[in-house]
Image (tube, rainbow, N blue to C red; front, side):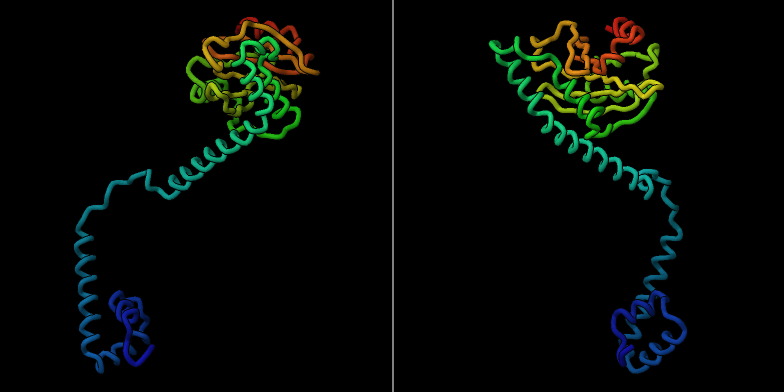
Length: 254
């Protein structure tokens, strides 16, 4: 401490943050600097008056939105959402050579017959299941939660097929972006670890709807069609998608 107390010393004295030795030392300096002593004592009196006034006020009601844990949870949720959107955009770039060329061809009447239907659904299955190059951004085995997630992101007319009779349950979903709007893929698995996917998206235009059909792509099969104005495809290995129970469940849904 210097010969003349500075503002930090005076504030510490006024707030009662000094130990006995430091307080005694500054009080000795006050004898040589009465003006600073007066300032420090005035600050101390102001602080006491303010505390007395605040003590008389009732505490505000608890606001859960101001709880630090709630604030941190909200920040983490917003960060996850931003990361999911960014990942989906990157993923769409990877699918651009398939989905982009498909969309271009569908817009050209003279090439529409050469376009393979729902190529983006098969490309998404290969990316997520075969290559495992991306992860789901929504997890859950609850059919109701997955259906609610699908409706929130694609629309009220999007409806998950119930494949439980064939032993398949939803395990997670991922969002994609298309020219027509948001698309989503929900992955199903059975007890043996076999995976099917349900991919749904809006058409490029109301005139670009798909009749029900099926096609093979290597070892994969896609069953596709239109329901409630949305295009959909169920994709999986021939052995799984060709099972009688799976075919029956899909026939009942479509």
